[in-house]
Image (cartoon, rainbow, N blue to C red):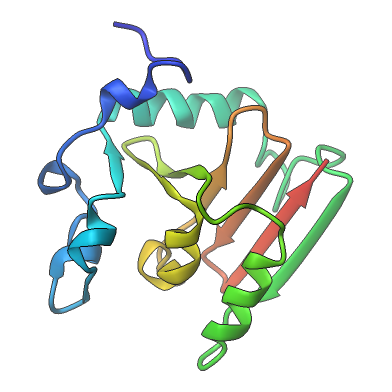
Amino acid sequence: MTVDFKNINEFVIPLSDFTLNWRFIDPKFNVLPDHHLKDLKPLGKVASRFLFDYLKTNDLHSDLPFKSGFFKRINSIEIMENNANKVKDWLLKSGLDSKNEVILSWDIDNAMILPFGLLVEYFDDFHYSSSDDLTVFQKGLNWAFLFFHGDVIYYGTR
């Protein structure tokens, strides 16, 4: 079966099979409450590759943080020690509904769908500044976040 945005939910895998599951279930890192874990929709490798290719086909990151001219407006915030509440407020000011599902793409093999509010609440579990570049978006790419490994989050809108 070919993956597209209409059937992507058919490629959800159990959290136990997701490579990055330790971020959400391992006491050494964080254990999210069960009522939040049930809202995480990790995607298998075929769907993750589809999303990675979608971003690549659109050249979203051909320039950093985003392809030149792709978005009309780009804002950013630095992730620093002790500014988690400021980052959460900034994310919420994007105007996205906390219940809307967003797509997270870490790399060619790892992607997930979840409500935006969960990303805001646990952003530092979804993004490890020292190692991750995480793109958050929806189909159509009218907006996107890039959680950059250099401790900066960029938000682009058309």
